[in-house]
Length: 141
Image (cartoon, rainbow, N blue to C red; front, side, top):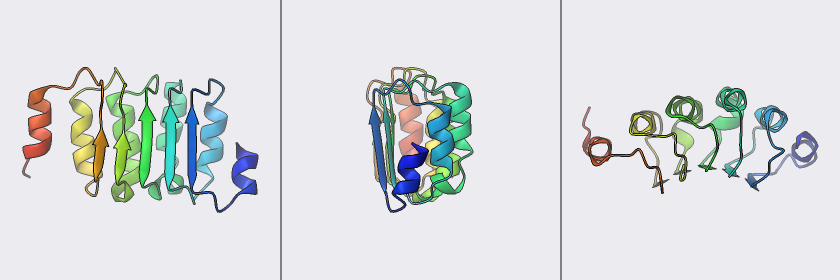
């Protein structure tokens, strides 16, 4: 992946679906890129260490406008919040569907760090509650 990113400095979108060999090496290569506007990782099993490394990707995450972490094994509320904090206000679209370890807790991070969000998909996130969603949509600081 590092060679792919190095050979294509104008690459703006990366999408991987069900790639069991992606891991810390991919995250390390991605962390050195700065032109990616869209990152889609679907059904990828990343270790907690790889997800922490992704949340520390700094400049590489700050340009992300569309982020998909769909069915990403190991993604927890805390790890997602750390990733979203690193992405910040550039994020417009977020899909964290089918992540069964997420709960209402991640909603506060989404609301706090991604104020320009235009689209949010959380299909089959089983730990979401109507109270948590109510707080998300009707919260006033």
